[in-house]
Length: 146
Image 1 (cartoon, one colour):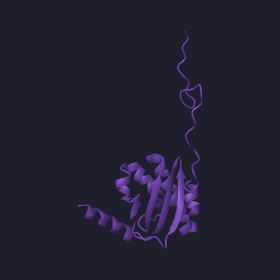
Image 2 (tube, one colour):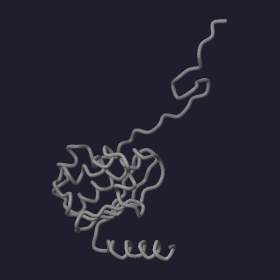
Image 3 (cartoon, rainbow, N blue to C red):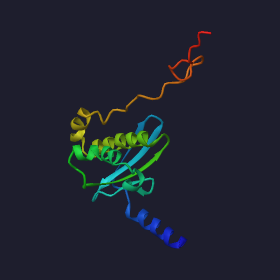
Image 4 (cartoon, rainbow, N blue to C red):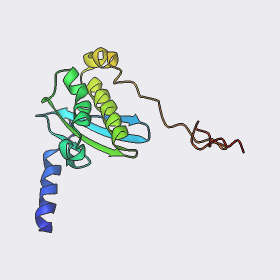
């Protein structure tokens, strides 16, 4: 049983040869995504899993495909991502940023369309730190009159 699993993983690695592809890094909140992009048939792997298996929610799957759908290149590129840190939405945002940066490296004429949708810019919003004397960043403790 273990031999079958290991052989399946080896075949996935053999199929995904990205030497002639482009590399880009995407970031969002605490997540960092390393994205490799090459001409292909639309295969999409995130951390060794297919994108449908990694992101179960349909809205996140469509958000991750957004840079490709805006440029009308859904089935033209094979994508391999390695993501770490943060939660699901942060990882999805990092992948979107990485894909759009890799697409602009591949085809520089796509940059205006991706920039108009604000996909090439890093979203700098992050969690505000907790302050002392407060319950959260801005939420105070409940006031007691007596």
